[in-house]
Length: 273
Image 1 (cartoon, rainbow, N blue to C red):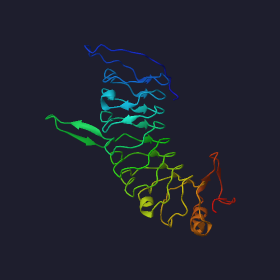
Image 2: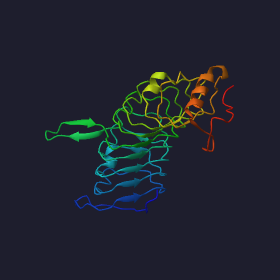
Image 3: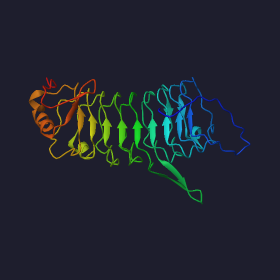
Image 4: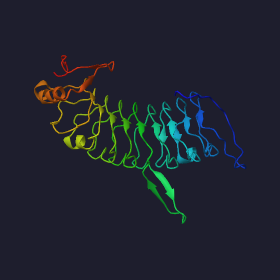
């Protein structure tokens, strides 16, 4: 993070209602193995919380209660983490969530959503209207429920690289109308359907590298805003890949090499077998 950060061990007396005007709290690399319930309840003005590179394995909504102003939450590299449904229900203003390298094997379809309670005590789960970036790369996800992201309609960046995904459900990205950056490289995908591509029409950056793809559907009329696309590392079949290659060249799409330096479509593309 670019902002000034610090490490802090703190304890609050539950008998006081005082709110501490803290905006950034960095507790990363502290070997924290257990989070106490309601531990942050007096940090209602906190905007950035970094809990990455610790050792806690369980995360519930009660661990994050009181963080009503939180905008950035970093949980990366807490290995073998188990996250219950509705864990982020109190984080109405959350904009960025990093769950990368946490050993996640499943993503509960009700994980995301802001809990709104009315005067009668009745509640409903609303979309998290401020969420823009979600990082789920470097986990062990094999399947994604089609409803996984339905409460995140305003995401613009979604990182799913380096998992074990074999299939992307057709309706998975349909609720995310503003998605512009999608990374699904380094998975085990064997197919990307035209129906799926039609749900990500605003994409500008797409990484599908290092999967098991042999062909893409006819891309004519799809991905009108695409500027760069990583496609290397797939077993593309040359006789079937020609149409895709022509489309890439005609659109002047930038290819991304392993070092992420772009090169023009005039160069030789050793992509198919």
